[in-house]
Image 1 (tube, one colour):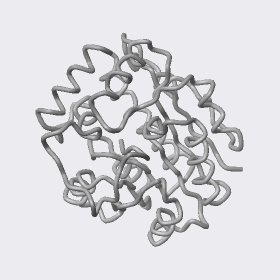
Image 2 (image 1 turned 45 degrees about the horizontal axis):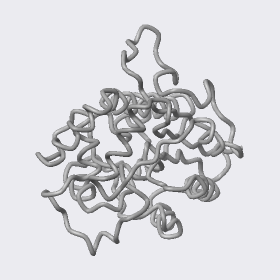
Image 3 (image 1 turned 30 degrees about the vertical axis):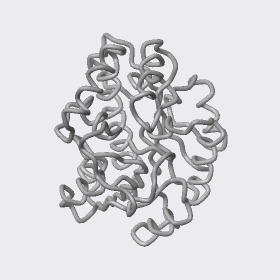
Image 4 (image 1 turned 60 degrees about the vertical axis):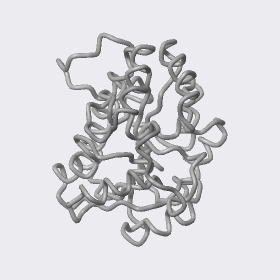
Length: 267
């Protein structure tokens, strides 16, 4: 995940492997390999505080997969804008979308030099690209996205766990509202974030804030629901990640998963 605050423009930053890094820690929780010992130490300590964090990471990826499959396969969306995409892992947006619809195009947006370097090195599919842009600078972000995507046609705008880095709920709402105002009617928002349902998750986030410059702020899911006020929620609504279009018979985690997600349409 890429935080929308406390970051400098990428040209002024360097890749550091001696301090813990948000995207690499998340990659570790997901079982990925794009992390270092310092990230694993912090990630393991966080897991002791919240045993459900690795389940949240896994369920968030399952939510992404199901959401993109529905958008690309059932709703015919061929354009995806994944903002704050983070490091590539398994079932990435472009892989899922292109499996369901070979005409799909995906723009990953991140402003972290590590993420951009890894992404551009590993990304070989011409239907997907990484853009160096910051969601705090929407004019530049969408101007660059418009060079690749046709914003006069429906786009799926994706915020996968990234907006929890917004310190104020007003900032979070503004990012979503501004982004959806820049895409046409018939576009979609795919969104999830961490919530306060689990006391362990809340405690872990508070501790995590002391070891990284990019704190995460879990919120009550009722408060987060307000971001959909101008949109049409698809069934089953804004629900726990474990419940969003989960296939019948798929095992449910035995530990608390403190995250809610939804897909909504711009009318």
